[in-house]
Image 1 (cartoon, rainbow, N blue to C red):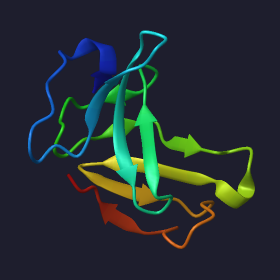
Image 2 (cartoon, rainbow, N blue to C red):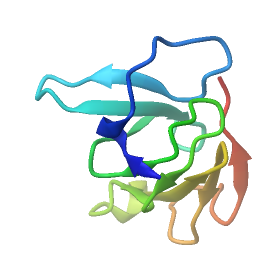
Image 3 (cartoon, one colour):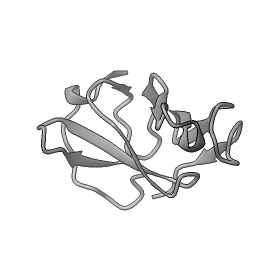
Amino acid sequence: MKPISSYPKQEHQPGFVVWELDHQDGQRRLEFFCEACGYNHFFDERWMWNGDYVKPTFYPSLLVNGHTPSMKCHSFVTNGEIHYLADCFHGFKNQRIPLKP
């Protein structure tokens, strides 16, 4: 596991469950679609990554909308699965869901 910025960029390929996004602030981001929330979440250069676009693992956990309990999504992404944690607002909490291309 290394910082996202340590890996070379790759063009999106069939089967990838995360994809590259260059943000306006110049940071690299890797996005994935969250089925529970219905929109994309992203990891930026603060996270560690295994370099795999098909079965990604990121560390530490990802907290989205943490200041809004009615929209909170908290998860780990490990080996291509989203592990939704117990403090999520949605019905996917405490479940593991494979990421989809």
